[in-house]
Amino acid sequence: AQSVTQPDIHITVSEGASLELRCNYSYGATPYLFWYVQSPGQGLQLLLKYFSGDTLVQGIKGFEAEFKRSQSSFNLRKPSVHWSDAAEYFCAVDPSGFQKLVFGTGTRLLVSP
Amino acid sequence: NAGVTQTPKFRVLKTGQSMTLLCAQDMNHEYMYWYRQDPGMGLRLIHYSVGEGTTAKGEVPDGYNVSRLKKQNFLLGLESAAPSQTSVYFCASSYLPGQGAYNEQFFGPGTRLTVL
Image 1 (cartoon, chains in turn cyan, red):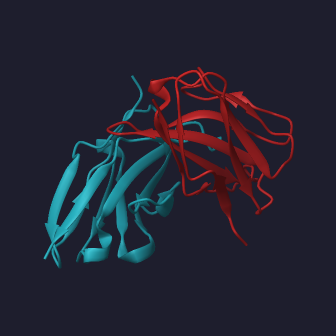
Image 2: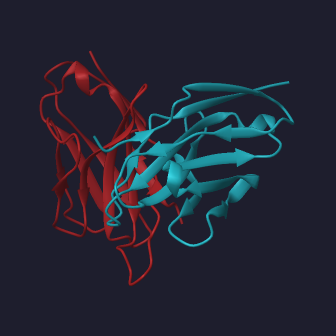
Image 3: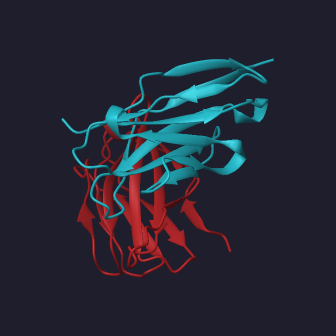
C-alpha cells in the first residue's frame, strides 16, 4: 500500500547534538515532499519542501533535508539541536501534485539538557 | 492578517449530539481542508474544497459533512457525534495550484473535540 513511514515514534537528543529524523515513502513516482513541525498545542508549521532539483533542501530554523530517490527517503537533519526544537515532526507527501497531503505518523523530539 | 482561524478551540459533546466547527481564512485561498489528528496516526484528510460551493471527500469522510458557502469559510459538521470522533481537528488552506507552482498549506491552531 502507498504510505509514508516515520519509523521513530520518539527520539531524545542532547542539546547541541545533531539530529536526523527519518522518513520513507512508498509511491511509484517522486511525490512532492514536506516536513512540518508542531509545537505543543499549536498548528503545523512548514519547515521545508522538495519538489525537484537539488536533493539537499534548506528550511527554516536551521533544518535541512536530503531526498534520496534510490532509498525513497527524505530525512530531516539539524547539526545542533536547541531546547526550543522539542516538538513533533511530521513528514508529508503529495503523491498527485494536487495539493492533497498524506502524512506520516510523526516523530516526537525530546531535547535533554 | 489572522491567517487561518478555527472556532471553537475546545468542545465536549455527548454521543449523538451535533455540532459545527468553523474555519476561516483571510488569505483569499481557493483550497481549504479539514484534517483530524489522532495519536499514532498523524493527520488524515476528512474533506476538502477547491473553491466556493465545492466539496470533496478525503481519506476519512464518514460521519462528517462540510459546506463552503463563502470562499473564506469552511464548515465541518458532525450530525450525530460518536466517541470515535474524539480527535483534534485541523483546518488548512492554500492557493490553487498555479502554473508550475505549488502552494503550501497553512494550518489553523486546531480544535480539540471530546465525545463522551
